[in-house]
Image (cartoon, rainbow, N blue to C red; front, side, top):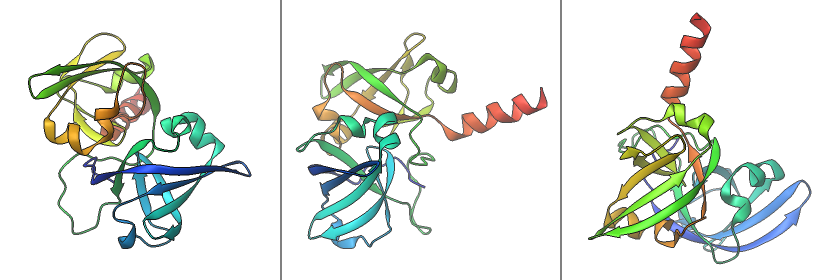
Length: 197
């Protein structure tokens, strides 16, 4: 489990094909604190550490993972958000993020407003039912508050300088593909009421 509070960013160093997928090498600042088998959320997608060499960490991705997340769009040099799995004694500061990406969205616009930025993201309509004004959602693994549900497929977020500088959001432009994980509690509530019906 993750909190959606990005620890830092890393950079994709290399990508090489393997059977049924690809091996990604990512430069990670906290690589020395990782062990084989650890879970790391990369742009919100939970991946397992397969190899560590200095600051370079390797992950094996299935073709399915590359197809249904934004990870398939990354290239060497791409900036990605990183968060280690939450420790049992850690403080909980974001919201429940499982690292299981539901879908991808697309950045519609990025607008500077004073020191902040207003970012609009379009997601598939079938996932909008899990969103509410001031609700939680994870975008590229970042725990964000929905500032405004703009229409049937667009969400608006206000990004503080801290989040802008410490995540990959400063690389966003119109059309950027992002990972979306909707609120897990909303999905449980939906299933519970569906079973009653």
